[in-house]
Image 1 (cartoon, rainbow, N blue to C red):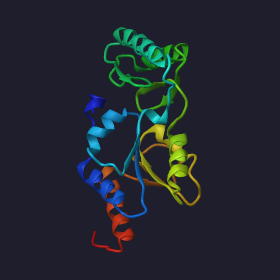
Image 2 (image 1 turned 60 degrees about the horizontal axis):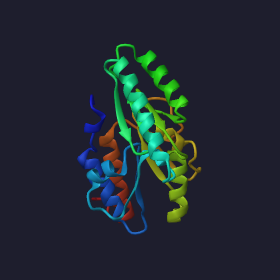
Image 3 (image 1 turned 135 degrees about the horizontal axis):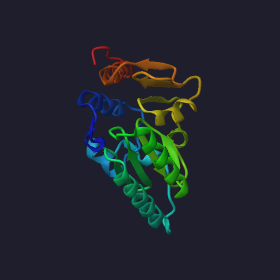
Length: 213
């Protein structure tokens, strides 16, 4: 996907996810690097779906917006120096995409350095420098969700390096599923989103005691 903003969930997978959320006693959440507004466009009016954006990071409401704007401006100026890069502004920081840069390694190193100078944390991603202001990551976000929902166990599915923060914190009785290749701390792996849809559909059928679902 050349434009990260154009990436949308697979329809069958999303339908299975929403069906799972309709099962009594099950809480479903999307924990993403995207903004809450972006996630809302995917799920629509689904009050039972918990949305956690920007990698679970949080900001105080005082002067942090000025700091975020400064970070975005700094990375935008850097992007002009590296053709093929792109800056995605976010409420708590910015994502510097360098997949199509002529010199990807130099672009990544420069973005990391400037993010640090601006006081941002860098979260590992696929060909992207996720510069985030404030505290929190996906791992702490899922831990908070476990507490707030009273969940007895967690099923977490992810395909990005940022999802490793969750896989590393799961309990032995939890299930972590890595989508695609690459090193992972997850205890299970599937090949693609079609397999994820099958996971959801199978789980819904099991929980509803209806193997045909």
